[in-house]
Image (cartoon, rainbow, N blue to C red; front, side):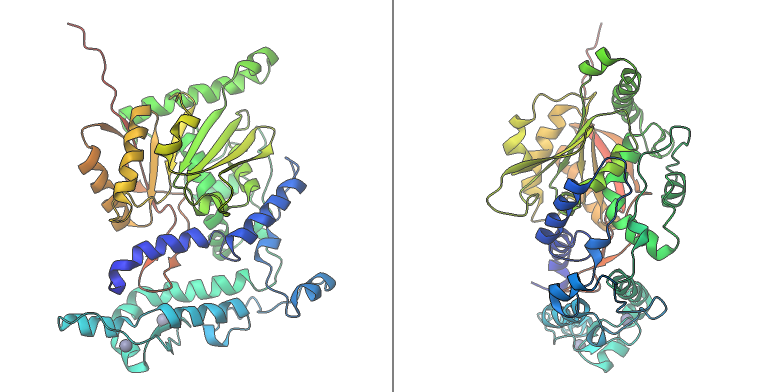
Length: 453
Ligand SMILES: [Zn+2]
Ligand SMILES: [Zn+2]
């Protein structure tokens, strides 16, 4: 398989593994579960432990040394991977050299009609610090790297060094419940973070770090909220408005019920289904409190469903109660196989999210068809995202081809204001990149109104 053809699949796998930018998913989950135990609903949340660099003298030294040691300084974040003072970064460089390919080699051989052949990328680009090409000559010959990739790789280099620098990551100390008199503004990350009082996010870099982990809960929140950026005239269709009004009626009822105990007993919680869940299911559970704070009167359950949503093979389901109003449930398996765990469905309480599902990807398409068919039957709104324009276009084309007659558009494909601000790169091909939840669109099974003569 050529570099170009296998990359998007690899990128999806990469996304799966690198939930928060460091550590294995299993370790991440252990930390997050420990954090949940310690978490009280109203406290500021700390993510420091997630990005702590590995202590130089092993775990014992890390425990003994209460004072954090700075591995790189804030004004000295750029390091070629092979010379990085941080072990994980040096290891990453080795990994890219082992599994990567030289784009100039690939281009030279394939332009001659030969099967793509490549030498290992042993040469590190002096500008971004990544091992990009097999030799300096092949690096010089590659104008695309210089004009399109290098600047983002440089940014990624500095960002990753910053996360592991050992500094106190104050931007991950998140605010708790929203003051009722302050309205959250969903126009952009800037206005959102400002109106939600994320006072510690003081630089573009900090915003990139934070957006990468918050893109999942805030994309859900921004879709559901009455002040959603997706409105009529901004992509939402008439059918979309109908579906979202149904859900917002329920949210309004939750607000009204808050003052009446009896009403509160009768309320049905919101059910948010995240299908094909990977990275989003591996995030620290208390991060989803940021979704809960946006709809503070609503009880909600987030269901993560997918073959990769639990880290260990022996578990098939589990539940985490994050707060009195928020529970996360994990179901291992394909949605169309486990659907009877969740039926019946109600368009007034239920909504589906498919984060970068790859509906149009050769490997995933057939598997998704069975799920999408079931989803359309529920008549509940379905929102999906894509890594970039091409990825979203290919998913939308596949959906239209397979289900065009059976679905209504709720939200026309568009850029998501709450996509991650970070680019992730594939280890095997640095020319391939992905942005979590870059674009978003919404559909629903067609409803056939009864026609009266
Ligand atoms: Zn080469
Ligand atoms: Zn470069």
